Structure formats: C-alpha cells, structure tokens
Length: 154
Image 1: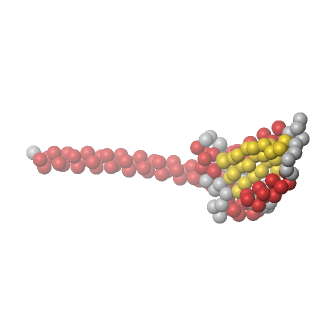
Image 2: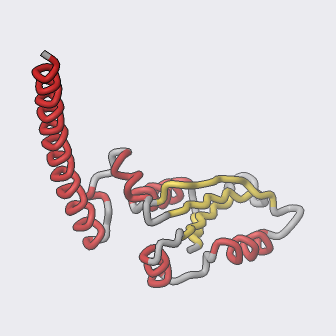
C-alpha cells in the first residue's frame, strides 16, 4: 500500500497507526528527484514489495504467514525535489513484538485480532501457572529422591 502524505503531521499519524497495527520493522530514506524521477523508484519498490495490493490481499498474505509492506511517501516543503520515504513491514509475528513492547490490545483496531490476543494472554497465564506448579512438584520430587538416597547410604 502506498500512502501519500501532504505534511509531517499526517506522516506521523500514519506511522503511529501502522505501528499500532503490527508494523515493527521499518526503513526510512530520502530521495532526490532532481536526477531521476520518483516514478521510477516507486515502480521498483512496488515490484519488489508488492505495494499495489488491496486490503483483502494484504490480510490474506498475513493469514498465510507472509509479510506485507506499506510505503508512506512525503514531499519536502522547502525542497520540492526531495522525498521522504518510510517503508513499514508487518509480519504475522509482529503483534507478539507489540505485546512485548507495551502496545495494548485496545490499540489494535481489528476485533478479530483483539480477541485472538486476549485469548493468547489468558492461555499464556494458564501455561505459566501450570509450569510453576510443575516446577514446584519437580522440586518436591527431587527432594524426596535426595532423602531416599541418604537413607539408602546409611
């Protein structure tokens, strides 16, 4: 998807939206169009990162485990030949990174994804509780084995 940004404020809003929805990997660079046309660069980036996909195609790619890319394009105000390009990459595992870095479930816009993350958190709490219980039982079992060995030696 290619997003044309008219100003810096809009660019930052788009960046925040994409990061909240799972974009974790990114690159930023500037391009001077006085030497070569920006259209040539956009064609190359579109061919390489499939930027011309519909939202449905992008969702399908994520469900199949493939990454998607978004390009945010902004023209400099004081230098009309200079373009700022932000490439944002979303992977199926990006939401795990978001959870580790404090992006809450309420910031994720899709209800289906919100429910998945809530269920994931519940299951994770259950698994952590079970693993702690198993570790406690294992420690008790080891202590009984140690005492049994001591009784056998004496």
